[in-house]
Length: 309
Length: 311
Image 1 (cartoon, rainbow over the protein chains, first blue to last red):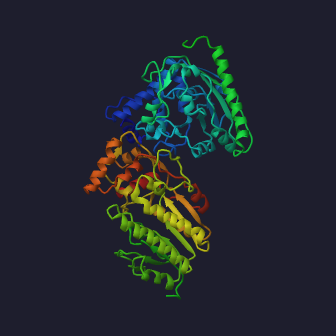
Image 2 (image 1 turned 90 degrees about the vertical axis):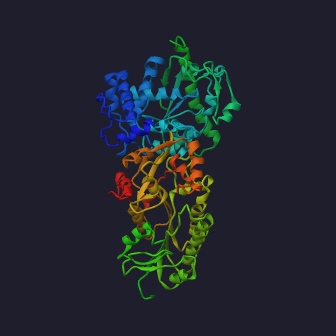
Image 3 (image 1 turned 90 degrees about the horizontal axis):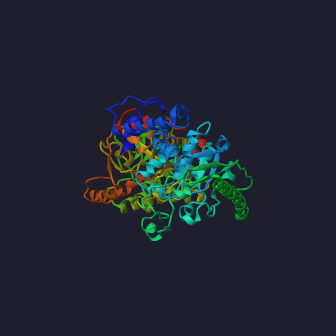
């Protein structure tokens, strides 16, 4: 409801991000008020520096404030408020190497864990608030996301798109930054005992990188795999709920533990070759990326002093 | 008749879209209009034949009328008509029209299909291209005939390479006089929406579809094309633009409820239409724009507002 009202009422508003904490307008629909106050929260937590950066965030958009895929920058900045709080105060994210992310099209390849893609969200917040210039990361979501009420709308407005090869190619051709988790559902299924051991990588991302001549930046997220230690995967219930996996954690509810996140960005890797090459040839390239992520993970784990602080 | 210059035949000319097309071509081309329905207020020099496309009299028009091109848009979309009648008229009518083209030396054929034939599905890519499978009937059996019409025309392309055939699949056509499901929905003061779903929707103005059909007449253009209007917009923003107050209904309630209401004749929206406000069925129209040079003349707001008779 909220998102609905808010966007509706805002169609008349012109500027992208006013930045100034707007006067509290009681006549505005509740959705819009919530959105505005959340956006102010984003700016408050981020401080003036982050506010200036976010205001310079440029995306393609039409007269209704959305890009062709349905991303809405105002909506995204509102959603970023709570995530930025998590980023700064809960997971206390530390990033390294973010300057290595090249401008223009890029594929970020990361390890993955957890039912709620907080690792993805934190990578997104990092690129929004710490990259120069700020980037709005698009990630490729599972095909069951569009069937979920509210979640589907939230994801779309925040720039997440269904993970079809055509979507990915279209976004890369317009020089966007795309986050992929080649572990896919296999990553979600990982149990605590398998933490930081990368599951097999799919080859899809490599085909897309070769086809669109896109550099790959390996990303290692250390901390996310301890936030919700999965004791076992409740497969029958997952099947019943039509979910790809249902890891059972000690907290039962999907409340993550406040593990400290370390996000490491690696050097861009460029590959050349035919996207329709033999699987074996592609696999060789995929393994290089996987090895890069794994070694960054290993190093990150070795370097950190403690899981929680 | 034979001495006259070659004509453009138009099926379904008496419908609101047909009339708009007639207006656009009138005076530029000799038109032979074919429709079962009367064409009230037709200009005196507009040749209209009130015949059923499936009848012999319709074929005579092709045999004797020196027809150089056919724009086939005589496709019925009336949710209240029986599925059988729909099928007979749309599929058989199209088969006949294609047959006349092949037999009587028509050199150009433009078939008006629809982007709706792809069907809204949760795993749809955001911008479906022309090679995507036509999946609409998977969850919405009533529009099987529209899928079949498209497929008939596709097979005609390779069976009769001598007829330059174009299949156009425009997105939701809206306009002040149009009474299709999309336009009717956009005119509701309190339209249903599905709680928590807000897919991107594409619309095209009546006049833009007409100009696209005229662009497709140009020689050299052939094949299957999506036709996209001025862009895409979240459903909620479209409704807000028109000043409507949506009534969100949980999706698991909406389908059985609408099914019941439709059977009781309390609504003219069949339950299958709900998918179009739940999932994406948006297409990539860049190929047509690139290859034909056509582009829409109406902007997003203008196109949307046209359904309520503004702009």
